[in-house]
Image (cartoon, rainbow, N blue to C red):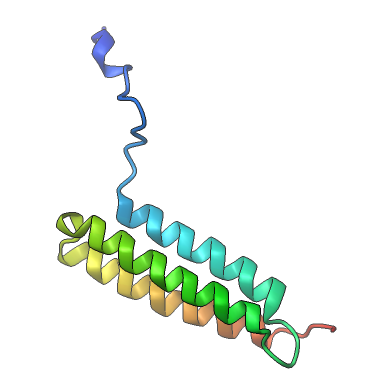
Length: 98
């Protein structure tokens, strides 16, 4: 049998690293922003506002959790940024009606 402590979790602790949560947030926010504000011929000004707010959030989140970012996590973050750019291009190239 397993001890009882195995099933007890610390309060406000989800066991997911902050770097992974940052990547998830980036993908979700960018997917919603592109779908909502950048699907027409002209990219809306609110899309750029969302992108700049997301960049500020990334900057302060990385600065707050700097000690957790080692080489593999930095590589994963860089790959995720390239994936977000690919997501933007993919959504913009799909046929859409405005």
